[in-house]
Image (tube, rainbow, N blue to C red; front, side, top):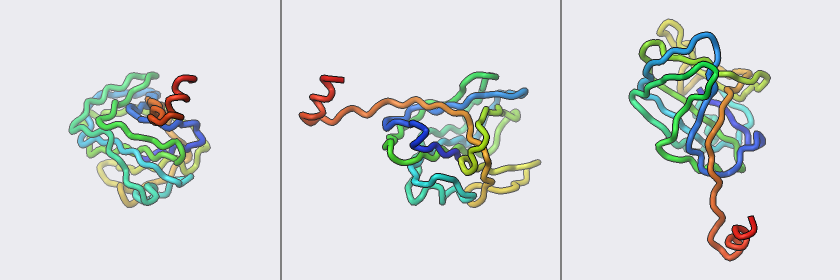
Length: 172
């Protein structure tokens, strides 16, 4: 799955160190995800396409988190997520693609995440039904009209060590 976070969503420049989702629904199951990875990528796109790689818009995605396996233990009506292995430096000017991928799971681990509707082109997902792919990563996904309810941990980038930077730091 990929979600598109627009710069106009008030995402400030900085080091992204954690990504979380809000778990909702009737069913939340703990378990393990195999070859679980999170990637972030700058993009100038304002809507996602069915082809995952096209959404990178010529940029190279950065893998920020990888586990094989990762224990998944979401709580109902609470935030769950992952602290990155490698922080991602977001420039604050372009949009951001967040990509989540895994290769199988144990014990039907899952959590439905809350989402906002009427966000056409902000989410693309691949589906597997009864072990048979309906559409598949990385060549084909299905564009959705929602975006997942997410939050990030981001730290501001320090001012540059120039004389102007030192002056600005003194008066903040």
